[in-house]
Length: 353
Ligand SMILES: [Zn+2]
Image: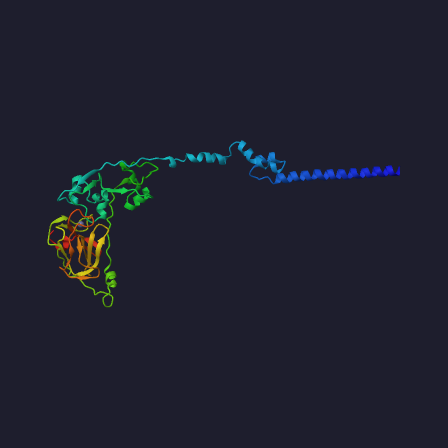
């Protein structure tokens, strides 16, 4: 009996241990579930309901749950985004219809402009080469005649309506308002097309020769600085001819005198040669003399050059020969006078034209 009681007591003891162990196990599971719920990402509240098991294999459930759920606002936004219009806006290219005119002997810029009821500067607006080259309004050259005063602008990559308006000092509305430009909001521009800029005037490119100081400083005679030679202040014709083929105007900064190639050219006044060589801006073989008193004279399209930079020449000295080099459509000399770097009409200085 003592043994039986002892066995019963021993079994009871095991039962208590088992009960305690069972309660501990339940308590652990409850705690584990609570922890799993607490760690659910706050951004997926719907999915949390189905993941209370907390096992690693259940981790894939949230995505599936979202995919099956009604579209969230973020996804709706993405669906709406492609509806933005600019990426699909095609626009229309400009449709211009210009007259042309072939320059005849004796034509002047004002005369041509008057024929078409436009300003002479608009000849530059429709013909950009006129402003970049020193001598193009010559017999046989075909000009684009714009229907109204303004500039025909070549659209460049990166151009905007605002940048073009600013470049020419006109308003965007002025450009948009010219119907053949075919500009409709949102105003797409096409590179390699041309748009009309009403009322604008094209800037004329002006090439600047080396300064007198730079040329005198580069001289290697004696002290290294050439003496300053000052001109007489009077000017003579560089060639023995008055056969003018083009006069001075906004689009042509000098006078052209036609005469056979190889004719001698002389210095219009005393001074220092500041440039003698090939000029890439249309002058061809060019000589520039700085007269030391604010004046410079230019001799363009030469066939030969007889002086070098830094050389002193006196009025009437031979400096080269006439030619047809650079932007020139026939043998002639381009003679130009600048006062304090500003182009002036040579006729004011040599007279007789
Ligand atoms: Zn010229």
